[in-house]
Length: 128
Image (cartoon, rainbow, N blue to C red):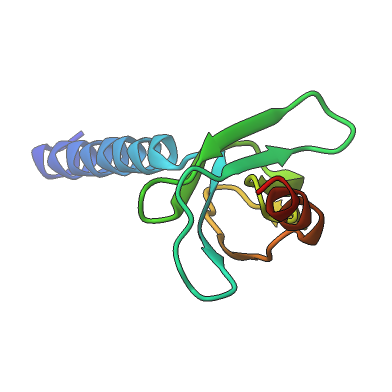
C-alpha cells in the first residue's frame, strides 16, 4: 500500500469506528419500557391528592401502583410495552377505569375526572 492508501484506509476505519460507537450509544439510550403520567381532578376541577392509580396488564402478573401527589399528578414508571387496565380509586369517589396501550419509550398522558360516589356520600351523610 502507498502512504496515501494507508491514510485513506485509516480514515475509513476511524469513521466506521465512530459510527458504531455513536449508534451503540443512541441504541443504549432508548428505554425499552414506557410510563404513564396524568392528573386527577374532581368534577369541579379541583386536583385530588392521594388517589391510588394502578396499572395492571390483563392476563399477566404485572401490576404497578402509585398515589397522586399534592397537585393531583401521578407518574407510573417502568411499564413494559403492552395493553393495560388503569384504575383510579379514592374514598368518596366512584372508581375510574380505562384501557390503554403503552408503547416502547412512550409516556401517554391520562386526565382523570373522578365523580362522587353516591353510595358513599349517602352513607357519610346518614352517619351525621
